Length: 251
Image (cartoon, rainbow, N blue to C red; front, top):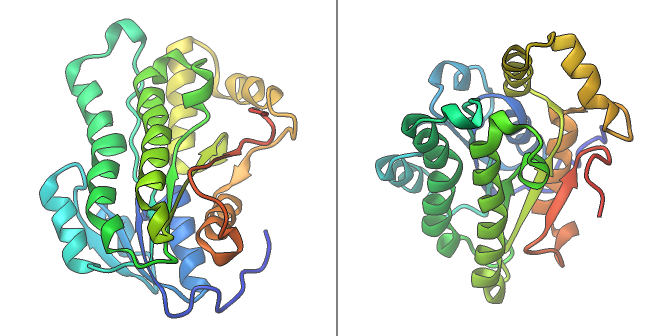
């Protein structure tokens, strides 16, 4: 991982959702270390308390009350990272309304309404990064079909918000992570292995066989890409979906 410039985001404020763990946490830490004043948002207050150097806000973003709480805490951010997400694994024929609604509420509804509220408040020169997933492009993990659908919708919303705010010089991009070492990834691997009747080790090996770089990514590596997209170094990028998959998806 590259050494972060200590002042790249000095004087800027950032909102990072899903900041209690995984890519969201690594991003909050990266932006903090590069000088940003970070509001770390998550519904897991216990894990948020272990994130030092950030202002922490425990809130449920799947509700409009939660969105309003973020706006009250950070009314005029310069940067926004929509990293909050949940996955409920079910065989296609066993997906019920609760599992469907939970994923749509967090992965799609929360991102939409938070972006709808905050983007007009972001000053020119600001930027947004949304988190999608390679599952949105492959569809091969059937147990994650609803999750994949919400992450495909994230790409569509990224383009819509990018068009809407381009004239104001506010950029909106997405990253499309593949296999990243996070607590969610560990849980997914164990659950999918159980549903498919194979060992976790067998499934882990099989998944990496499809990755040309033959390894997973760390959350910190992924956060470095997000920081780049938020920075002025990416000033001519908007409406893009950047694959971060070790070559699993190539264009």
